[in-house]
Length: 129
Image (cartoon, rainbow, N blue to C red; front, side, top):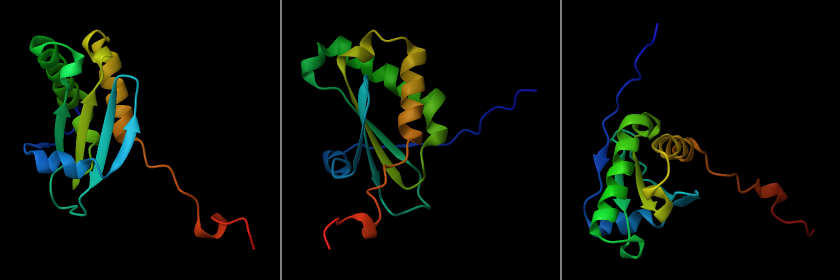
């Protein structure tokens, strides 16, 4: 018996200051896109997501197609993995335009679920005594 995944609502990042704030957060690189993540320290608020496709990646038609593909991948496959109180910005790369949709969705869900790498404990930070 297939149990449908719980749908989570995801807000949108709309203003430039919101996008710029996320740039200060963690960066998770991928072959198809860069995912920037910022913990707003507000776990009772919904996750928010924004999409960026720069002009160097083609004309308006191509950029809009890349943005639509990413939005749909988030809606169908990745919104459930987004943590409340976090902001996510997906910065597209040109390969998003021609990559299979299943690959985009899988990579997006994988990057969202990825935990930040530990910087190490403070006891092992310095090798010198």
